[in-house]
Length: 98
Image (cartoon, rainbow, N blue to C red):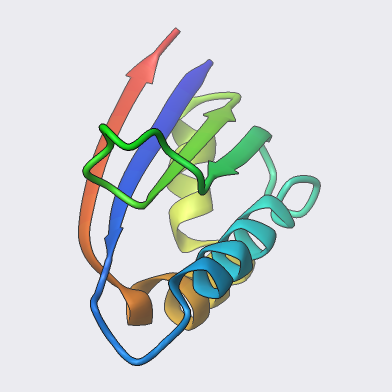
């Protein structure tokens, strides 16, 4: 099993950050059952006041190969390009095997 954890900081801009975070959550979580090898995916949008990032993706994959396939899967690319990248300024990633 491979865990894929992403933290994002949203850009400052003329948009509703809560609405954008909700759209990112729906978009990414809708990939379960669509992307082969994606076991589980959750996007957290409400952190404690001690947090310095706005969103966290917590996902699990069957293997490294499944994670690699996810990164280029058309459904994932559409969500990333349409809902995530236009609104985020910082992305941190940590992948590990369990």
